[in-house]
Length: 192
Length: 252
Image (cartoon, rainbow over all chains, first blue to last red; front, side, top):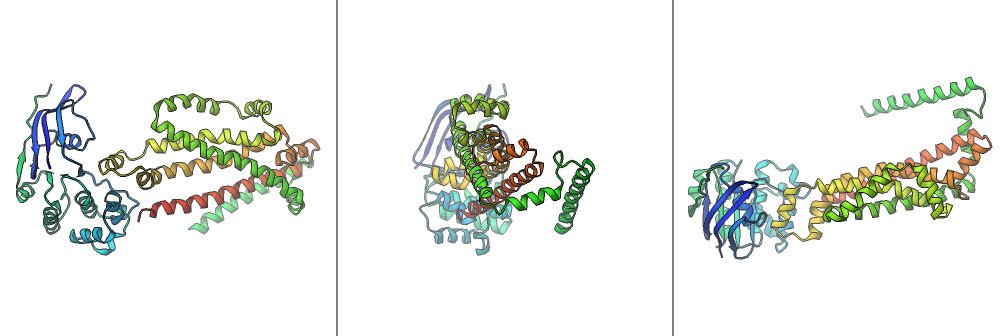
């Protein structure tokens, strides 16, 4: 299970954001790059939300993501949000995952709009990892979590990954170190 | 706080009723301006009669048929316009035309095409249609793009996305158009009846009251229209609010 990018380029108007990117994603991959380097664009290309303007992108099976924003349906509960994207799972399985991520029973049934930032982040994380997919993109997944919760969430991600490939996008060196794996490099482009 | 507001509102209404009463007394000619008491007296005389309820039923049935028809067609056209640009391009001038043409022109034109008994159905339909269409289309276009991308990434089926993403976001726009549309349907529907004069309608009763200078009855029927329209609007808004709550808690 992997995704292969060969000579991939993407531009918006005349401005290239990515160019001649060669990349093979399998196992754990960590992407650390400054803002504006094309991290989000790369994620959007992998997810099929954008099409490359050059090169080719081939992926085995489905790819899902925890986006930079939580993107939860505000009126649905934490469980409802995960169930919406993971219809193959029973309520108990979803609740067990949320509990492992440190959400208490009281929070499972709360409408997502009433969850705190950290709680919503973990619901979005659970949704990404529990959805049936061969590849997972996590875009700053632990942003806003306290140290203990972050460690707990990282442990859970390791367990839930279950052999699938992961692209972790982060600015945090500690997180990157904890996940190890291959470093993904996006070359800097000359601005035209 | 709520009571304070209600007392103020009631006082404002009482003030204007008093202005009305004094104006009627000053004119001393009830065929020019019936007093509130005379209007009330006429209303009390009308309500227990079978003919009154038959007229209300006749008009309500047709106006509501036009209103609900416009809700259905307006929503479907808005959905089609949101997904298919050619439909949107095709529909836009039609809606602009309906909005721009005076209701009286529509009524006179429509009299050539439909029986006067069904005129209110067509006119209510035409007046409410652009309101619903515009609001629902706006709602669909304002639906959170990030949630739609999420639905695409997680391959959420259309029916599930409809219930979890589209409906909750379009609903407030739809409700707003219903509130505006209900009042509009009654106003335009009664105007159509006054011109078309279908037998047994509220519009016909209004016209006859004017013809025989029964100003008290004219005022009483006007009050009936305002009350009936208000009751229907209140009931419908409550039903929509209940449906909205269902949508809110719909997906667990």
